[in-house]
Every structure is written in C-alpha cells, then in structure tokens.
Image (cartoon, rainbow, N blue to C red):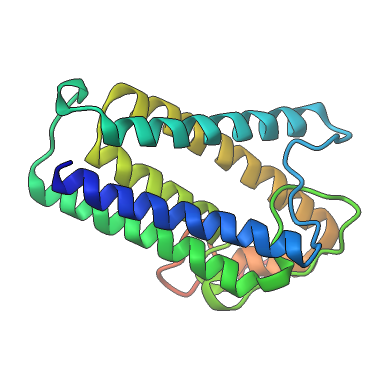
Length: 204
C-alpha cells in the first residue's frame, strides 16, 4: 500500500467507527433515532430515503474498492498538494460528523418520524450550520473523490450527496411544520450548510 492508501484507510476507518459507535450508543440507550426508509404517508419522501440508503451503502463499497485498486483506473491524477488538501477536507468532514453527534447528544435523529418530539438544537456547531452531520458526509465523500478519482468514486458518491440534499429539504420542511416561527428564525440566522458571517434577521 502507498501512503495515500494508508492515510485514506485510517480516515475511512475513523469516519465509520464514529458513525457506527453513535448507532450503537443510541441502540443501547433504546433511543428511536433512525427513521430512514420507514413507511410514510408521502411516497416521494420514502423513495428519496430508500435511494439514500442504497447509494450510501454503494458509496461505502466504492470507497473501499477505490483504495484497493491501482491508479490506472483514475480519470485524472491530481498533484500531491491537491491530494494532501483532500485529506484535510476529509478530516474536516470527520470533525463535522463528530461535533454534530456530540452537540445533539440524545436528540440526534436521522430521517423523519412524525411521532417523535422535535427539539431545535441551535447552539454549538449548529449555530454555524443547520446540517453539520450531512455536511460531514459531503466533505468526506468529496475529499476521497479527489484522492481516488475513478469513475465509480465520482458518480456514486455524487448521487448519494444529491439524495442527502433532497433528504435535507424533506427534514427541513418537517421541522418547519413542527416548529413554525421558531424554525424560521433559526433558518434566517444560520445557513443550510455553513455560515461564515453573522446573518441579519429577516422578516417572514
């Protein structure tokens, strides 16, 4: 294995260890936090969530495959400094994932569950991003695309990102229905992905 494969394997392992430890902790605490793909009133929402699950699984498989195969399959081989920057992007993705989980604590939810009580978390990392958890996935996927730019590792994660963006819109619509003005106020202050500068309050 070369240095790129070794570093990517370490980062990939760390990313998914955090992901699965979070799932395990919630299961131990008997917290019903996962609702993706569950039966819903609206077919469109359920379809998006099922596609999201499928392409996230395919992305994980593609990422492992991309680390193993050689550079002959790459569409382009980026300079070393670009690939190093990609590792930094991946590390930021891991940090975003971790911070979002830590900040949410037991309020952490994936997907839409109409029966669950909704609590708005607007502090910590959520004061800079409304969706730091998904942003963590975006950054990690994009970073790994740059390090291993084969056709599968570009197309499949890109579709996964597209499905996540659609899921975000579904979740935000649900939060608006549940929280109304409280969510509008939060939405006006914090951007969907990243807020670099403080936003002025907007009227409804």
